[in-house]
Length: 182
Image 1 (cartoon, one colour):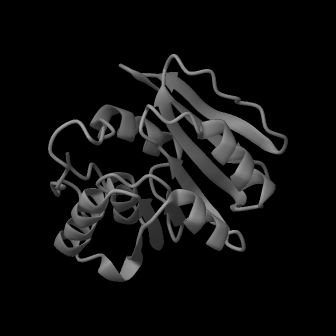
Image 2 (cartoon, rainbow, N blue to C red; image 1 turned 120 degrees about the vertical axis):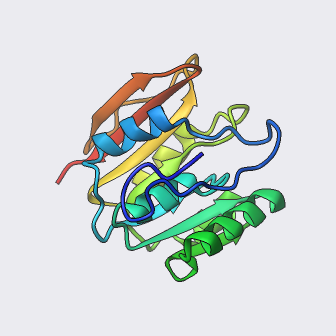
């Protein structure tokens, strides 16, 4: 897996061994970032299920100012830290090894330009998390919620004040990008 655009383009990322995490494929990542406009100057990012941190690091490579990355796996946290060090981005990334619900509760007074929701496929929490983010006003005007989930899952795509920017199926997953209307 690698960074596909921006200042760190081509940089290879460390990933977890085995099937514990499911990295977002380059083709899927490219579709996500093309839908977001490619470059994300001064955006703030929240990555709720960080994995390797690839989506956050791609965002920073494309101009995002900072990212908060959450993961409950100690192994994932170690990989995220290793990637942050290799990219020399430690000052732009806050990494939390914790349950996502605990960290989200502490972040309710913050707004983000992009929130990535790519939970393990066994977790069926996309609807719950979208509602939480929206009800707590955690998405900036013109900001995005980017979701990846199994293509067979039924996910709510209609939220007041949000429009579907992208909804597309890939190999085993579906990508949904919700944009907060201004």
